[in-house]
Length: 347
Ligand code: AVJ
Image 1 (cartoon, helix red, strand yellow):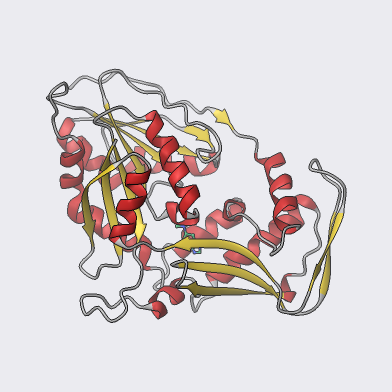
Image 2 (cartoon, rainbow, N blue to C red):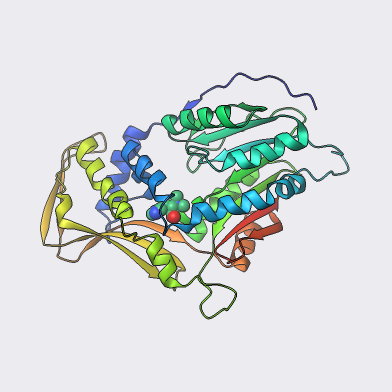
């Protein structure tokens, strides 16, 4: 299994500064007021999210990691399954929204065990996250060649720098897909599907919906709510950091003491919603910027800004999403408590 040696490269393919101003104006002037969850991830927000992943209440990260530890070799073997035209496939792993890639090392190590070495192509909007990812993989997993790509895969067609004679395993893990409405999730996966070739696969991490009354699971609504409303207040800080960010980057004058973090379970939509609720009637000012002239926002007491949706899936719903995006679900792995699912689908 000979792979070409490729120097790591960073492709700058996004322009966050203007995107932020436009997104904020659109969201805050709509009814009800909203802000997109990608706005959370400035440097402070990314650091707070890393802290969230280590909270006792936030079971998602550690559960997915445990699934990888138990099943990494099986996952890689399944993704490497020989076909007629490809009797001995060599995998290249690409990861959408790689962040700092802390869990990915487990899968990369399994790929190295199977094929000797592997090329890993993390894609993220954050350069600092990709630097940390590269450092982390270089230090911990020998045999991996890292090629970073800075891009917003949700709005830009992902330019896949495909290596000749390798098969792609696309990773979209960590329940990142949960931030999208069902229609948008389908569009993101269709967009990815369009870049893949027959035999390529997708590994999708999905947080599971509570199984109320089912004896095989201890996951109920309170488990979910606690994960988004931790005792240490890290999730509250993560949520309100978006307002601090608008103060810092747009010169807005949000008073953070006058908004409170709320996480609610919307069972109809099968999603956790995060809101920032105004404690008092108040007015906030956003100065003129690249997206247009200055504007003021009026809040009634109890009115909120909807800052995030985090969809939770049943296995059947995962399968429908994959099918409607042009994929075929081939395997699904869950933890013993049925909190989280890792799904392998073929293009
Ligand atoms: C990164 C989107 C998977 O929805 O659980 C964590 C973000 N928000 N706590 C999630 C998040 C509040 C997280 N995702």
